[in-house]
Image (cartoon, rainbow, N blue to C red; front, side, top):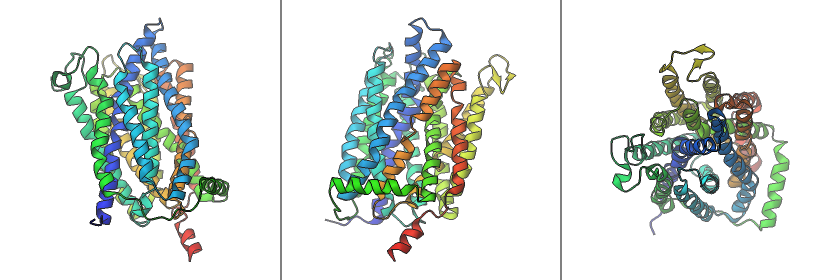
Length: 461
C-alpha cells in the first residue's frame, strides 16, 4: 500500500472542516435556527401570547436546547479524550460520532411548520450537535501531529478557512435550490427542490437537515482515505486513563498559563457561539428578516470568515496566537454592543424614520465582522491550545479544551434566555454576551504567549 504523504494527510484533515461546517452555517445559524424561531413564534402566538412575548419564548426555547446539550458535552468530553489517548486511536471515535451527526441532522426534516414537532426536533438538533462537537475534539487532537508549534497556526487557519468556504457553497446551494421565499419560490425563482418539495409544508427549508447530513457523508471521504492515526502505543486501561485525567485536572490550577487560557476561552468561546446561534434568530425576531435575507447575510459573513481566517492563520504564524485572540475579542465586544443598541425603530436611543434601511445595512456589516473576527479567533484558539497540550496526551488536552468551552456553554444561552424572558426583548437578551467577552479579555493577561511547549521540551531533555 502506498504511504500517505504528510501533505496529503494535512489536506485530508482540512476536509473535516469543509464537511462539518454546514452544521454551524446552515443548522445553527442561518437556516434551521431562524426557521425554528419563526415556527416556535407562530406556535406560541397560537397559544394567545402577545407577539413580543412569543418572540421571547421562541428564543428561550432555542437557548434551552443548546444549554442542555452543552452541559452533556462538557462533562463527558475530557473522559473520552483521556480514554482515546490511552488507546492511541481517534479514527474509530470520529466514525462513531459522525454517525450521530448524520442521524441527528437528517432527523431535522421532521420540523413541521405547524410547530407540532418542536421538542422532538430540538432533541434531534442536540444529537447532531453532540456528534459534531465530539468529532471535532478528536479531529483537533490530531493537529499537533501535523506540524510544529510554528506551523500549526497556519494549518489551523487554512483548515478553518476551507471550512468556511464550504459553508458558503452549502449556503448558496440551499438558497438557490431549496429555501422558499414568501412567494414559495427559491432565491432564483425556482420551485423548491426543483419541484420535488411542497412549498406550503416548507419542505425546501426543512431539507436543510438531510442536505447537511449528505454533505458530511460525501466530503468526509477524503478525510477517511488520507488521515490515519499517528502511531501511539496503548498506555493502559480505562481505569488508568481516568486516573491520569484526574491528575491532569488537579495539575491545571498549578499551571497558571493553561488555567488562565482555559478560563478565558471558556468565556469568549461561549460568547462567540451565542453570537452564531442567536444571530439569525435576532434577525428574525428583531429585524423581521426572511430566511432568504438571513441566508444572504450568512453568505457575506462566511466569505468574510474564509478570507480573514486564512489571513489570521498567517498572522498567527508571524506574531503567535495570543495577539490574534486579543484583537478579535475586542472587535466582537464592539459588535455585540452595536447589536444590543440597535432595533428597527432606533439606533442607540436615536429614533429612526419608519422603514429606515440603516438597521439592515449595519447588521450586514456586523455579519461580515462577526465572520471575520470569529473565524480568526477560533483558528488561533486551537493553535494556542496546541502550545499548552502535553505532547503525549493531545486528545485529553482537547477534551479539557472542550470542557472549558462547554462547561459554561449553558451560560450564554441560559443568560440570554433569562434576560430575554425578563425583559420580553430578544434585543436586550443578547447583552450578557458583552460581559462574557470583557471577562475573557481580563483573564488573557495571565496567558503566556508561547504557552508551555518549551517547558515540555525542557522536561523531556
